[in-house]
Image (cartoon, rainbow, N blue to C red; front, top):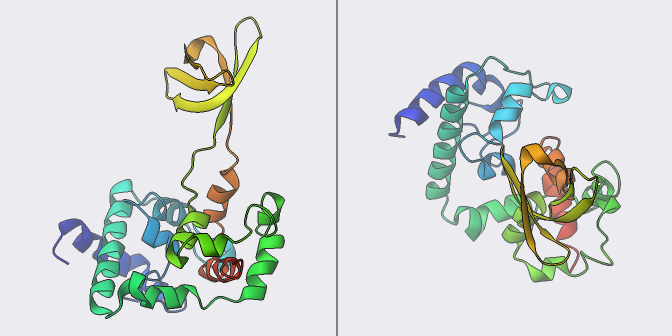
Length: 230
């Protein structure tokens, strides 16, 4: 662990996190962060940060709202360094088998209950329709990645013009100054943001909300259930 940010992160982690997650992040009274899908998919604290700042009080994890972005990035760097070390010392590595075996230890029936109940997945997905044969289409690792982080952008935007005419299309750009869509006619349209009203809809919002609710067990259970949909 030669990087300075990872060293700083180690210090902060040991002060604030190790008592529950273990000094090596392999878990203690709290879950293993080495095997956490959220941590493994984090980029510079973008997923870890909200969990640290807001905590998971229902699961006993306090919030740390005073942590700076720099401290969160350092902790993320430390955890990614730990994962890198773990992967290098495991003979099969995460993709070759070790992590896959971990992922497949979930409970199928519990995953099915979560899918149809608490997770709300059944509101949009069906094992008999869009998910039929999903486990045969993707490798286990890819399947897990896709259900946690769907790779497609399905956002749409409805633009209300000053005349109150509305135009809806696929959102292709939105910043503080401009919005652009591909309208139903196939034409690219853009407007200065201060001249129109914009309503964005993202059918994947539910996936993003779940990222902050999933426990590791939930992820392994749902993944194990999805693996049965061959």
